[in-house]
Length: 221
Image 1 (cartoon, rainbow, N blue to C red):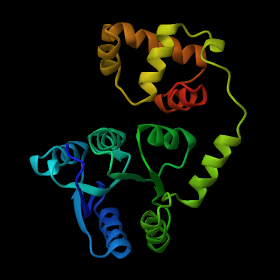
Image 2: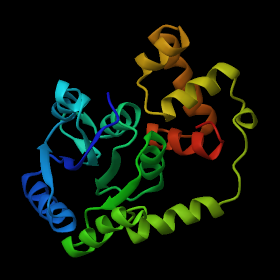
Image 3: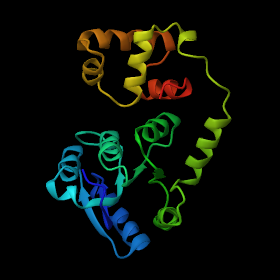
């Protein structure tokens, strides 16, 4: 995709109609004039992003919910980051925990807004973009500071991970599916699924979000 940006085009990906409506109002209030393109699914957003006209006019801003009916919004964040690096991609979500935050930032998100805030707060946060400031909800900014203050975690090898398991952990933390990780490593899906199971056992974790957090803390992504 080309690097030319439509300075007043924003993609909003949100499946809940009421939330989509007030987020659109917040975007219009923050950046008037602006054109907001609304999508409700991962599939719809990716199709819009890959349409031929995006080659010459990528959106200036993308605001993406993480929980969508047909998949994970993180797929959209990654697609924007990889294909449209000049587009600013921001997460707007109900999830304020470290695991979701780390995964989003690792995937390429440049901002993280909690939807529990009122519209005026979100408008104020969005306006930071044009001042060159990261659009972060206050509690998220505090979490990021806390993560940097946290003592270093032991290395992956300290947890007894093999070289192949460490590679697998890094790929899973970047949001790749087991099948995608298998293709990258030149292995079968079953083999990589086995590695993931061992990784979870060795690290004492039980979810992809925890795997992402541990990978980031170990400097793998």
